[in-house]
Image 1 (cartoon, rainbow, N blue to C red):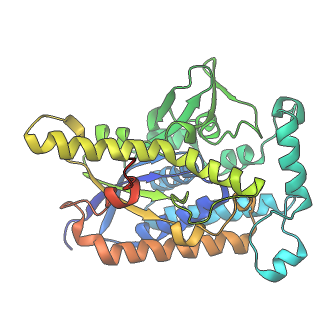
Image 2: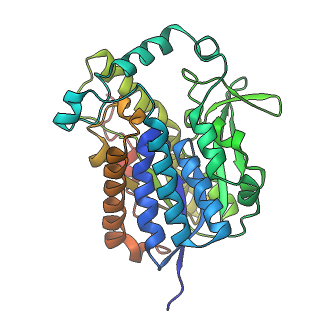
Length: 344
C-alpha cells in the first residue's frame, strides 16, 4: 500500500449544521489513502475535533467514525426534550427550519430582551453535560496522533485565544461554542470568552505553524453568497450571521493568497505561508436554503440528512481533487473569496 497523504482540517462552526461536517469527516476518515494530522475547529467544529481526538487516542479511524455517530445521536437525544421543535405543518412539508416554531420564536424574542445572566441564572447548557459525558479530555490531551486547536474570543480584549490540544478542556470547547445571547461567557483563568467564530471560524495559522502537512482542507458550512436580497427581519439577521461568521476566514485566506502571489513569487521569505496548499469542501448547495433557525434543529432525521450531504460533498471533492493533495491548491480564492466587482 502506498504512503497515505496527510491533511489538516479547518472546521467551521454552525450549530446543528455541524452535522454536515460530521458527514465530511466520516467520508474522509473512511478513506484509507488519507491521514488527518491536525484539526482547527470552532464551536461545532471544535466539538467534532475533540470527539475525533478522544477516539483516535483509544482506537483508529473506525473508532472515530463511530464516536462521531454516537455524539450526534446523543445531541439529537438531548434535543428531544426541547420545546424548540418544528411544527406539525413544517414536518409534513419537509421544512427543516424552526421559523414557525412557538418555542423558537419565544426563545428568539427573549434573547433580544433579556440577557442570559437573567434568563438563565443557573447557566444551564445541555451541551456541556453531553460533551463532558462523551469526551475524556485527559485522553485528548495525551492523544499523540492528532494536533488540535480550538478558537475562542476574549470578551474584554476582543482578541482571539487559541487552545492547543495540550491545554484542551471542557471549558475551552464550551467557550468556543458560547453564543453570548444564549449563554453566559465562559470563564477560563480569570478571562471571559465567547464563541470563537467572531475572530476565527476557523483559524488556519496554527495548522500552518505546527503541522508538517502542506494541505489544509477547509470545511465551510456558512454560505458565502446569497442571490436574493434579504428583506424580512429574520432573513436580514440570518444574512448578518453568515457574513459575521465568514469574515475572519475570508480575510485569513485572502492574506495567505496575497502573500503567496505577491511576495512568495519574488523569492521573499514568507515563513509558514509559503508552502500552504488550500482546499475547500463547502456546504453551499446543501445549506444555502436553510434558515439560521435550523441551526437549533437537533432532530435525528435532519442531522442524518446533513451528514449524508456532507458525505456526498466530501466524496465528490475526493474524486475531483485527491491527486492534487501535496501538489497544488484546489481552492480558487479569486472566485470564492474575492469581490470581483470594481468600485468606480
